[in-house]
Amino acid sequence: MVRLEKCLYDLTQFCHNKFLPFLNPDQLYGSINPLIQNTLKEQSFIEVLVKLLIISFPKVAYLQELRTLAKAKMADGKKTAMMQAYTMQKNEKGF
Image (cartoon, rainbow, N blue to C red; front, side):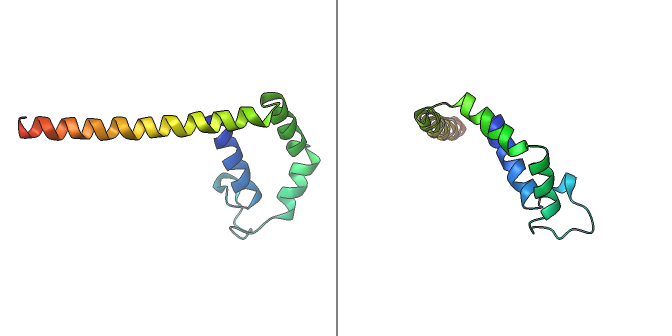
C-alpha cells in the first residue's frame, strides 16, 4: 500500500511538473506541461496503471478495507507512541 501511494504521489508530482528529478530549467515549476502529458499518453502509462489497479483491487470494497486498516494502524501507532512517552516520563520522575 505504501509503495502504491508513493507511486501515485510521484505520478501526481510528475504530471504537475513538480517532480524535481524530471524538472528542466526551461520549464515552469508547478505548471502542467503538455510534453509530460503527451509522453504519458504515448507510452500508455495511465492505461497500464489503471489495469494494474484493477488487477490489484478488483472491488472497491478491498480499497475501503485497506483504508480502514491503515487508519486503524495509524491510530494504534499514535496510541503506542503516547504510551511510550508516558512511560518515559513516568520513569524519569521515578514513579
